[in-house]
Image (tube, rainbow, N blue to C red):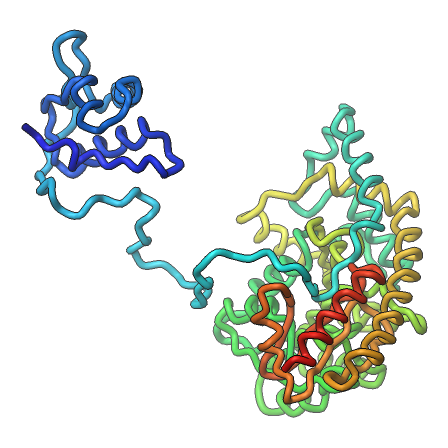
Length: 482
């Protein structure tokens, strides 16, 4: 008697229905040659007794196999493996059981992006989360945005507009955004200079793919935005780091490198550097623009939170100054509305935007046209400006409230410089209080910490005063116990 109990492996605790487990086991036995074409299978009653399951389960499994042409059923006579299956070299039935297909590792050569492995074990949802500078979705005009979105899905002309030309971004959003950036940031651009992306990170990746190669060199600050570094490294380019101090990126260090080797690009976050929040000084901005013209390198300007400045008017972007079209300017609405709303933008000369659009189409034929047009409506009606005015007032108050809390309760443990704007503080712990201790707490999740610098970003914009106080009290209790 063929040992079907060793061929058909079922697990009653597994989420897969039992009849599917039986069918898959028989298919695997046929594929490996254990069951040959024409081989008879036991009757449904016999197999149900052997496996200790209900007969209806076996009937369902056989029906599934019959529908897929793996077996032949002759009513009241026999059930057999289909004759259409080619003969395969049989394997011993008692060899190691075959894993379900996707429980195997992929054994063919492929490119590895990240060598790090996730920690094993059950993940614990932390009680407190310190983000790296997210907006407060509770005060965001998301309801108005979604109301407009829904209205666009029910009208013939808006349906047509939402499904046309999304590769570069809907024309309506690009036109409104070009006008908005002109009014708020001094950018003299048209819709042809704008590419709508799934966030600033996508803009940086597309830019890196077009600008850089294994023969290229790009300069970044240290510390820097990790996702940008990863995008540059994936091109095979050499990534050179220069210091970032209280006045932003060290432009003299950039100049020294330029005088010794060919530089293809400089990535800079002039408004509030990530993660340290410092602002690139006016003098250094002028020096960087002059170096770009002299040594013919591109500037990738990441302006992720330009809209939040509290003590004075912000510096205009580098892209608003006089340059030869060699600045690729990126931004995002994620810092204004909601981190999960993946709408970013890139501003560049038209020919560069055309090629970025072509590259983007290879992996993504376009964005959500309804959402883009709904966002365009918010910009046109002034809703975005009204929201920013309200948000800046609230975030300014939260920054100041957090400043008082930190000075009052965490002064013995930390140091920081209060930034003039932005949505986060860069907190440096004193040497005797390692940030690794905070990182390893199951009750706390810090989205951006640097063990080498013994520092972390404290995003304050997404927390109200009660939440800020609870978080600081927890940090005080934890650090005082070290």
